Image (cartoon, rainbow, N blue to C red; front, side, top):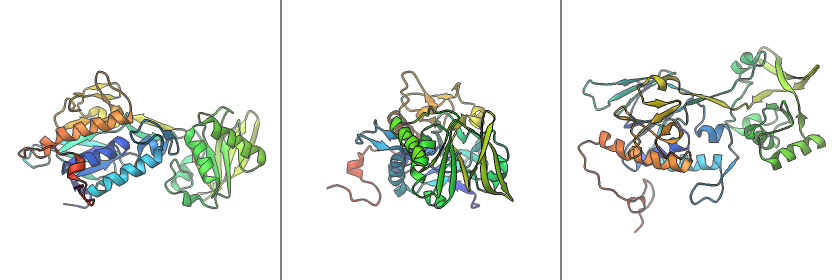
Length: 346
């Protein structure tokens, strides 16, 4: 088997909070997982859109920041040694009828192959990708690594001149976070109204008045300037006025676009961007394929992370009968069974 081929029990499509919890749920049932996502980082929208936004409806946490939730879910999944295939999309899904134990063959956009016994789709409402702004020369500086739609490591931006564009939580949160380590930060938005926490926006405006950041509002980014792929400036304009902001890096946060992509061709029962499932098992109309989280739909559906956790737990229990068809299952509570690497309570 080549290093690009991964044999597993469950292929989880989507590395958001629901997909990550699916690794734990499957692991507690002795099933291994390969997790794919079209984004470069795990966490889905929690990481890409609002990493520092508080979430108030996670049981046991009166308030928890989105990124902290993802960190905790990754730790919870870690004992079960998942394989993460990131920055790649599932392109084809093939049902195998060759008598092998793996009933499905999935191929990604980067040529990775997953052989799985069952599939759970936890891809939000489809594959996410950044909204690319209509900025001249954008592709040149994307290729040279001077344009970033996600922040993988804050340290990568230490001592840099940054131009951040956008009007939502992501743009505002990253201005506040990167200001402390960057040489200089500019925030560019087309209007003075932001879609972010009022207290944070007020702080940005005060920093602008005090000269601690460049508060470039209302302006729009038009052109990126530099030579040989090295960014030197970001040109912004408002009406007939334009100016160039010094920049080493450009970070456009204009949200993410979602699309089902190849999932739409898998023969699933779809309602717009949702997959219709049996609410008792989260099974789709295609045997062996399940769906959980925002992409799953059934009467009475609640679009909450909490509901997604429950759905993928049910999907894993239903998938277990496919993975271990000849093994009788005895239900055990996690408090009695324990987790690999942790002591079992007496």
